Amino acid sequence: MPELILKSGREKSLKRRHPWIFSGAVGRVEANPASGQTVKLLSHKNEFLAQAAYSPHSQIRARVWTFDQAQQVDSDFFRARIKRSLAMRHSLDGSRDSDSYRLIHAESDGLPGLIVDRYNDVLVLQSLTAGSEYWKDTIADILLEETGLDTIFERSDADVRVLEGLDKVVGPLRGPVPPDPFSISEHGLKYKIDFEKGHKTGFYLDQRENRLRVRAFSKDRDVLDCFCYTGGFTLNVLEGGAKSVVSIDSSVEALSMGPENVKNNGQQSERVEWRAGDVFQELRKFRDERRSFDLIILDPPKFAPTSAQARKASRGYKDINLLAFKLLRPGGILVTFSCSGGVDAALFQKIVAGAALDAEVDIQIVEYLSQGPDHPVAINFPEGAYLKGLVCYRN
Ligand code: SAH
Image (cartoon, rainbow, N blue to C red):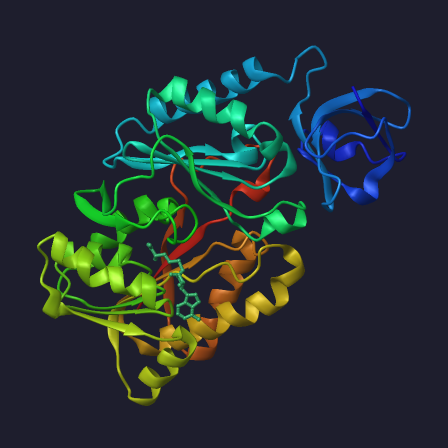
């Protein structure tokens, strides 16, 4: 097996079982491994550390499959990991009220670079790294065998593939193209899914529990749903008895599915105003018009994928949270999220606190939110905890 030998002193994170090896830690690579091939990771003293997938083009030069020297990284290895992920979803998330959830959450399920989401009877696979790409066909066959399903749609079109030297791929990987229209059900609500053009793998599955949570706060409230996508939170606040909802997103394509979702659930469409626009600008307009709301949801896209963008991202979060606090009536609730890996929970809370201070509002945090149990965080991989939410009550 090809070998990757680390520089002196660079084995520390691996000994803590963190799965990434950055290019700067690499001393030398022996036997010219192919992209995605399994390499043996050795310390500069030739001690065995792990077996990892080699990414020749990426700053993250290798990602660990296993810390066990005796383990063969082969189809049995992937079958065992996939079975383990399925078993966890079955036992811990078995009572979910949804036909859709994440089956494999990459590093946090011991399978770096691999995302697999289940949408009713369709699996959507996203391969993000050279290693997951190398084993993609093996993995696809095992997924069908272990789930008993026959359809896998591939959404390997995330920008990070470019960093790995991989082209974008979208289309059926196994079985037929999924039926169109296609709907999923979550907490009693139906959502249309566009497998080809929808964001991520089609839906923001990570917000499942939070959408339900927000439903509970919504009775008789005037709601502002910012970054609404296809109406995830909007449908839930309608279900919870909201008086009115203004729902904003910059994607006209996503927004166009909102009214359809409302109609398909037999909800009152006249309670919702869908606005195509930039939230930063729309919030300013509302401030100038002295509009106010009882419940505001801020669920923006990733402003900082890594900590390198944390400063710029902080300004973005501060801006929208400050504006939202200004639009919030006394007794109102702001539910504010960050899904930026580069902004941790402590920093996010600090930014929101700064926004409340500048808006001159008296705020209590009444709940901390995060991603659902189908998006676990491996204890050795804190980067897996990317979604943070604060429920803020205005006195
Ligand atoms: N709350 C949604 C998910 C939101 S994801 C749900 O539960 O399904 C973030 C959304 O923000 C995306 O739909 C994206 O189109 C939108 N977006 C990104 N930048 C924006 C901006 N500046 N103004 C408005 N919407 C934006």
